[in-house]
Length: 382
Image 1 (cartoon, rainbow, N blue to C red):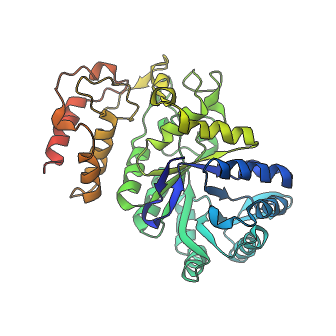
Image 2: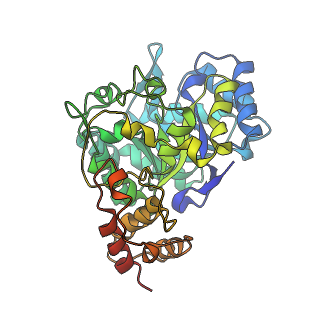
């Protein structure tokens, strides 16, 4: 298992995390088997938003004696009412539910306290100007939560949270289909791909801007819905018209700026193994470039998606990596030292580009790669 640093939290986290949603309805034995398989394969990050008492109890049992091995992303503002999960902003309900989470998990702390599901301007103000954020700060000051996070599906609202400086972790829905939907698409329409342009796909710049802003600010992205609820795994349901594998979906997310953990919902130990298989596959086997050449029209935007479909390069440049560092560098007035260091650690940089242009006809997004290489030479001057 490969590990990344969870932004400014400093926590060392597995690239693949375990999503809690599919634990609902499982027995204690089934839940433990999934956690066992995750632990055996190096997964150390678990997202838990589910308020159902049996689900929390079963996970508490599964974690007993090895709580320290896992980093838990536990959600505030999720309650169980009238037999179903509900999001709330009622502070008393929020407190009771969070205290219940601690008790049932048999722990006295949560590593990342995730403020649950903030998608609108009105809700953002309710949360950030009201008792919910105040409660999260109180928990952090007391050491009950290590870091404050927020989950969202709206890139504009998510960016406000990043710019506030108050959150260390952002849980966001990322996959190649969602990245091509309008930034203003409602979550339910997003899941049905209704936010896509009629007759083709277009890269949404708001989402790409968010990812780079997270990386620049040290706000870690943890990814939800990387498989698009399974729709991307079947050609019939995928908007690209071709199927992706679970490892390909994971790789797409890991290639976005700011992403540290891709959280995969697993209903069985076999599904955990399917996810961690990503770590053993070759770069070619993890490649998702085929979705961009499937025949579905993609509106040219000139924005690199880091798919590396432009390869091979006669100068052996990792064009996607150079462009990612360029995007990060231009987010700020001066190039951060860490970005500069990572750029110059590449085996080949923009100065090695032959300017042959062989890569550009291969790019499905119409990126002017040679111009990007020229800019990188200027930006990363030593």
